[in-house]
Amino acid sequence: MVRRRPAPTPGFWSEQPGFFQRMGLGVSLTLGTGLAAVAMTGFLGISAMLPSSEAWSHPTASGGGGAVSTASEQQSLAGSGQQDPLGDNPLYRVGELGEVTCQVPELDQEDPASVEAFVHAVADCLDQAWSTYFAEAGMEFASPNRVYWYAAGHSPCGAFPTEGTAAFYCQANRGLYLGVEDIVAASGGTDEPEAYTFLLSHEYGHHVQGQSRILARFHSARAGVDQDKADELTRRNELQANCLGGVFLGAADESLGLGGRGRENILDDVGLRADRGGDHTHGSVENGRLWTAHGMDRRDPAACDTWDAPEELVR
Image 1 (cartoon, rainbow, N blue to C red):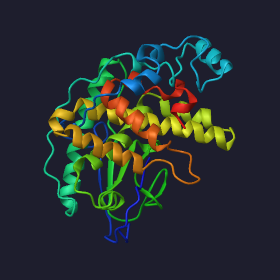
Image 2 (cartoon, rainbow, N blue to C red):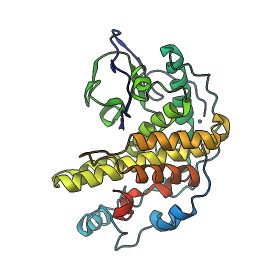
Image 3 (tube, rainbow, N blue to C red):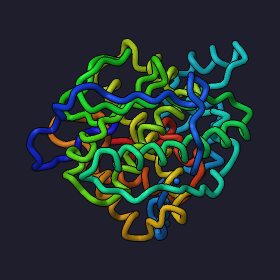
């Protein structure tokens, strides 16, 4: 879930009746494809704090620091012939996401039709990039259903909109839900297209987690634990989505023409959506920026294994 960033704009939710829904590949309509996003340098200090991708991709039997699975859970998975979807996932074994070429239209954030066309083009790009990657990993993949709303509605995960949420992913129906006008209001009406590209790539990151069985394992691990542990797991989940979104952005940076300024705009937007006050579910400003930047730099999902990361990197 990407949360609303602080914005002075009143009247957050649209009053326009109805909402538009388009189904993704593998549902009822065949969508066109494209490809999309951002790059980064000077990450040596952060990378030194992070375990190597190879070490994270193939954890030892004793597990890494901060690992979610207990020894008994890992033993159970080993006994059943299954891998641990969190720390040892086929998604982590392919290497970098190849260069992505996106063709997106100009964005007029004051025109809902322009916003919708823009996010559809980015979503086409995400579909093609991740479906190709999953095929290389030998994993099944179905593109998410796209549900773009203009007014209140219902999903299998509950009613929308809700306070502070302009977009979300619902695993129950593989639904990528996005308020066409709400994301603009939630982003303070910015005319910077990369803010919307990041928001969509983050939510798509949750779909990547769902398709690779990470989400199912996350929900299982969170069941029955105390609030502090549940919050920690949620932060690991959200920060991984940041990183996976960054992987896509790094692979598509040239075609999107983001450059250094676009990168900084994205990282600033990440910081605005981080934890504040008593909320501890999305991670600190520093860690939100760290994982997003790490994904953009490495362009490799193996670099996004937040589940085995040290606790200080997921606070």
